[in-house]
Length: 200
Image (cartoon, rainbow, N blue to C red):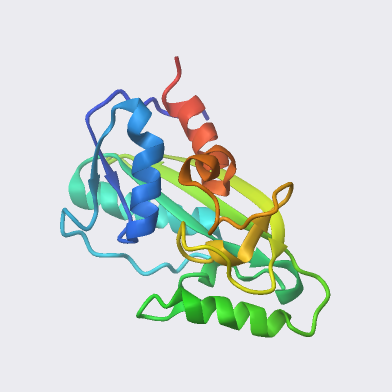
């Protein structure tokens, strides 16, 4: 099925995560989209009940599109650690608890990995663009790397300080935002989204 073109106007970002909102807004900036967050519209966060990143992105985008009457873009992303059977995975945000303490979540990952040799991991980003009439297009990107021994850097958000992408000697937490926007899991998914929904 061909993706539906986004031809301008308002787009709801179906997220209440400030770091994610900032990153997505920066990625959308070159396309002159009038972005409004779900939080600014007073939309509730739906419970993420699906079993995949794509499923949860679709659920959030559809809920925001139906509640707002506008097209809505949602991202569901997380960290999969191979030696932990791909945990925290779709539960990445939940590992941080209700107070969104990612320092605690990173410490949990590092504690569980302490006795294991395999530190391979990947970040996954799934994007869903939903319309009020129920149409939904989906895109996914990932980036592979290693979990470092201790958090490094204060940039980014979430698990960024413990993830070092392949081919780099710095973590996402140490990386300049512009550099991360070129190669992150979200950037990969966004390139697919832009190519499909903002064709030249």
